[in-house]
Image (cartoon, rainbow, N blue to C red; front, side, top):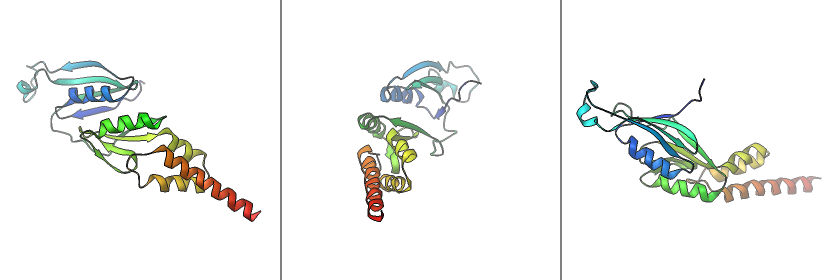
Length: 174
């Protein structure tokens, strides 16, 4: 079986969206565009002629597919794309780009101007949550919850502070 590929339905902005995403994410490209040719028996085909029927593009090496399918399906938040960043600068650049015409949500979630939902997060978050003790994980979650755009430094500080508090408590008890 081939890898599972995300498929995004656009009303009529597939080509604009592909170009936008390819400009937003590194190591990205449009691989192929198939256009409506007319005389295919599709309702409204006169208006569709030359528009994107389907497109294939890669974002950071991952393949996506899309189409301009009309107003049948609307974007929704039940599916999102998680993008993890090694550094805050890379996260900030993509966040700012997706925010252009987009709408922020809590905890690193953002819906772009096409209605596609993304989770833009530092890789550090997952690292802290898997290696920390209960107090550290709780501190990281408490630091993250009020954030809109996630920031690595406050997450790391919360983690380190909970570790120091636990160490002090253990030394006092011992």
